[in-house]
Amino acid sequence: MELTHLTIPQWQKYDGLLHGFMGRRGGQSVGCYAGLNVSYRVGDDFKTVSQNVCDMKAAIGIHDGKIVTMQQVHGDNILEITDRKMKEAGEADGMVTAENGIYLGVLTADCVPLLFIAPKQRLAAAVHAGWRGTLAGIATKTVEFFQTRYGVEAADLEVALGPSIGVCCYEVNDDVATPLMKKWGALTTPSIAMKDGKPHVNLSRLNRDILRDAGVPGTQLFQIGPCTKCAAEDFYSYRREAGETGRQIGVVGWLPS
Ligand SMILES: [Zn+2]
Image (cartoon, rainbow, N blue to C red; front, side, top):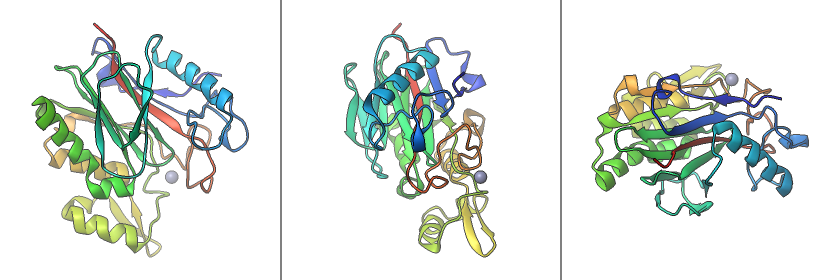
């Protein structure tokens, strides 16, 4: 079966850029992980996950080199990755690299995966933003990391926001909506709506607006993919499966020149 592999059409022009948001379609995992689960941390069979990772890498075009993932903890820690042999970066929710031949992976099942590139400088970042990371401002912190570490301005960044839970399905309580509204103010107006008396959050839209507010031009922000909870055939959803499910991956990196 063909794998679900979403790419940004506007990024096809960049030579040496490998990227994509994978779905669950076509993998070897079974049961509640059925499909292309690429997380070793959710209780799935190790060998099967390993096979899925191989298939996923081939689909993205990574024939040589490793994908680095992190132990995501819904925080705002960002790590710089410099070691091509590294597979696991430790506790963080964002990784940035200036090294070509390093591929960064972010695992999700409803949270927003963000892939950053600075095409002129051939830099990349992969970021995990659930509501906690969004509240902590991890998207803005990544923009600042590019500025302080590499001298790259927000105007030179492009960001892809992958499949995540949509406003259709992301009903929350006030303990989530209120702190988000306090922190982000008017930026939340288009992304938090009341439906049947309960707040619903559009996390992807909120992160997009936060990035635009941080100086990334709107024409360099790309949202792709459906609501993960609605698209059961194509994507894992933590909320739909009540916690027991696999993870899909978003990957970005530059081939060695
Ligand atoms: Zn939905």
